[in-house]
Image (cartoon, rainbow, N blue to C red; front, side, top):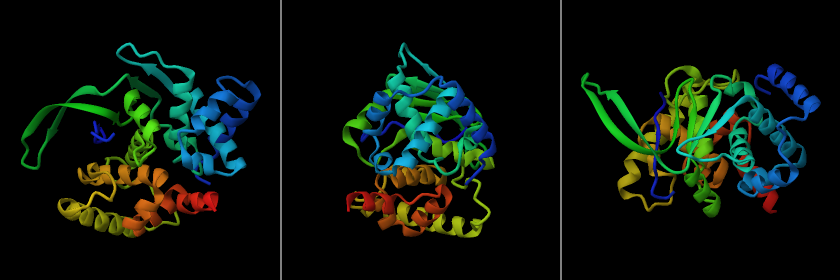
Amino acid sequence: MTAPRKASPRRAGQTTGSLKRLLGLRRSGRDSISDATWSRSLRTSPYARSLSGPDRERLRELANLLLREKSFSGAAGLVVTNAMRARIALHACLPILNLGLDYYTDWSSIVIYPGDFRVHDEYMDEHGVVHREIMDLCGQSLSHGPMVLSWEAIRVEDSTQGDYNLVIHECAHKLDVLNGDANGFPPLHADMDGREWARDFQDAYDRFCAALKTSDGNSIDPYASEDPAEFFAVASETFFTVPDLINAKFPAVYSQLQRFYRQDPCRQLSRESS
């Protein structure tokens, strides 16, 4: 199981299979997001709105594919609407825009709670002692299992448009575990150097943890200090929400994320504002 996201007070890849699914979607037209719903979903992501017309269309096609391939269910009495599904699908597909939906093949369902949800966790420390605790979470990704989300946390994000993005955070965990354990080391592309990735992320993580006590708050979410897996997930959500922040604080990490996700949000957003 990946490390869960705790409730916060602030708050060319593999293409063959995806191409076949895309052709099937275009022929059937089923489960497609309406123009009005897509327009409303775009308002929740400045980065998605900044994409070129063709890239926004590819994002919409990916979102439609994800809606066909993943089941969405409400928990604790929540009724999941088409607008909720579309909003989640848009944000889930941003990280894989240039990777493809095959990166999400190891899981099939998304569970949405009205608000934070309670889980019972069990883990063993380095001394072999088993600890049990009850946690209130706003997001959780289970290895080969469902992604669990708090709709209230997502709704708050949409009203503030800050550096938090619960869906991208949990999707980053899903990418992380493609290599096995959640450790902040997703499967890299052939043109990337694993030693450089490990060096850059470890250096940034160590500096971030050391600086927390004296930080002025002008940095990424402190939850990134939990462990390397959370640092990767928080860095990923910041990469797509406030890319200038991650680039200013950890330029080497930004460069690695740019190569991994095959996107450059800083350049894209600056082009949009110019």
